[in-house]
Length: 198
Image 1 (tube, rainbow, N blue to C red):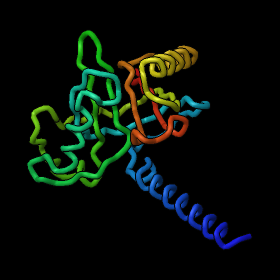
Image 2: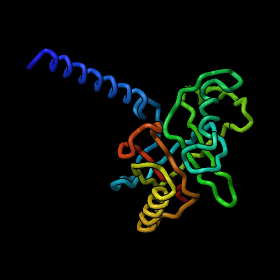
Image 3: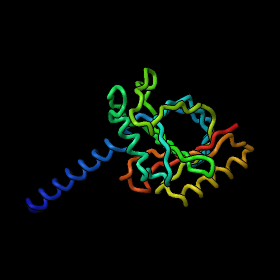
Image 4: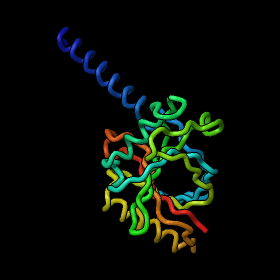
C-alpha cells in the first residue's frame, strides 16, 4: 500500500470519527430527558407514568417544525431572554399540542431539574409562559421519520387502535413529542404521540 493511500485512509477515518462524535454531542443523548416510568411495553407502544413537569411554552400555528417562530421564542428564553438572563440547558423531548378549531397549538420545552426545582426565571417575551404539565398515565407510540401531518395522523390512528384493544379511555387530546435536532436523519429520529389516559 502506498503512503498516499495510508494517509488518505487515516485522514478519512479521522474525519468520520470527528463527524460521529460531533453528532453524538448534539444528538438527544447529550440532553437531559424528562423522567417517566414504563408501566407496559408492547413493541413501539407503551403506557407510562409521568411526574409533574415544568415547561416553557409558547403558542404555534403551523406543523410541528416551529416555522412560525415558536421554536426560536423558546430557544431565546433558554439562551437568556429571561429576568435572570440565565442560560437554561436544552432538554428532551419538545412537547407539542396540535392546533384545533378551539385552541392554538402549543410548543413546550421541559425545564431541567436544576432549574424547575428552584425559582424558575420569568420570560421577558410575553409570548412565552412557564406552565406546569400535570403528571399522569399516558399511552404512547414511538415512530421514526419526519414529523408531518401524514406520519402524525398514522401514528395517532395506530395508538388509538392499540388503546381501544386494551380498553383504555382517552383523558385528553393527542400530544406530540420530538427528541432530535432538525439535522438528525429521518430513520434515526425518535418521535412520539402521547395520549393522557383516564
